[in-house]
Image (cartoon, rainbow, N blue to C red):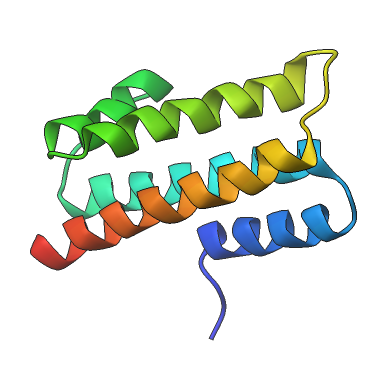
Length: 114
């Protein structure tokens, strides 16, 4: 059985962390959780918002305001990783893993209740 795209991205992020590629890991973590959220939005038969803040609002409106904010924090970290001169640190990417896990838990909760 093949892994879902979100799982592939997450596994790649973990490998990137081991190799010290924190910018790549931060980006992969964000896109992994984004894909999980998009898959849920499709499951409940809604259109996927194009803007990241609108996608985060899906979590907010379903009662997961803190997770919505964490999603936007992962988005900001991804922008730092991909666009800024400053690199993502190991501490930042390890913190991103914790945020990812919390958001993923919320999405799983939503799936089980839908």
